[in-house]
Length: 414
Image 1: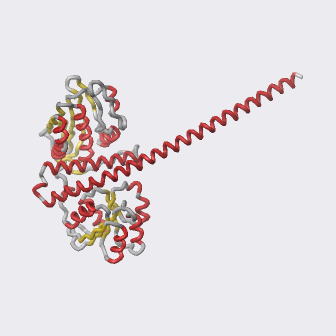
Image 2: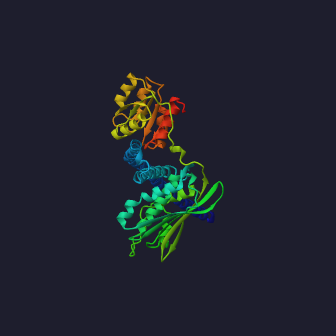
Image 3: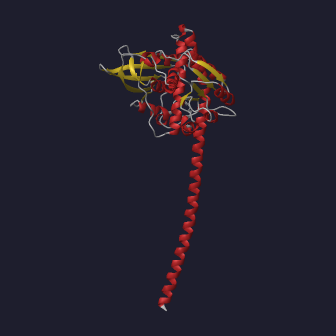
């Protein structure tokens, strides 16, 4: 009898255990479904965010392309303007915005990757002067004064990445101006040490506005964070995109140090090591090329883009034909011979990918180069599959455009 009772209790316990197991299993299954649903939703939002930023960058590139292109044309048409500080400021601001757009895209798609640092020869003092001039409007409208001090001991011809350096400083100066009202911002460039081949330079931005609180100091290195406005009206504006600035300074093997002083405001400092150079800005020297007689078809639905590229290439002795849609571009490519075709990607009705595919159906020889504001990380596979030979991102740098064309048509530079 005892065995029957024990057996019955054991059966009951087994049944209870089985019941609880299935109950917990149903709960876990429901939780897994919920987590999977949340993961898919997060993934969907991430894709939407990437698409939004890519679309936004494309829309920003369009007017920027016109500004940079027309500025370049003005300098070419009126040589006296080449050294005009306002023209230089416009060019500097355009280069800065383009770098900012590119870095936002890079961080958007490859958040854990390092930013590529270029190594070009440039004039450090001139680059810093152009940066300061670009803030003229901001200081005039805020009643702040931006003071600039450049150490005369510094060898101004250096090798490095002027655009990344400028982007960091643009953010720091902009941020300091936002903290300051009817006050002063001091921008200083000093030599820390130098050898025959290297120079270490310290960049310092100081303002006499409200000091940065400990909470706001932490928030400087958080993505897209804005400090709460307090009674003392101290706030962090959106001028510092912390993720980008931190990555940029790290890319230059440096780090921003923030020091607070209740009497004199706050100071941002970082140092950069440069190689000294015997030449300055060789990338801007005019190149002599054998362009005479080369025929180019430029396809773009934006009239301003057509005008800018036409003018740039015509000055280099190309024979240019422009058209604003893919259908007419196909007819021209069928009926006439061109040495190269520059193809916009984002066009209405028939985009550049579709236009290129139709041209490749009867012409597989003519190089077709994508001239696009669309982020190419989304297009690499489509570009190759369509038969495009190469691509150039808008806004277009003239020397880069010429290099890519020459590479694809086989022209040898003199």
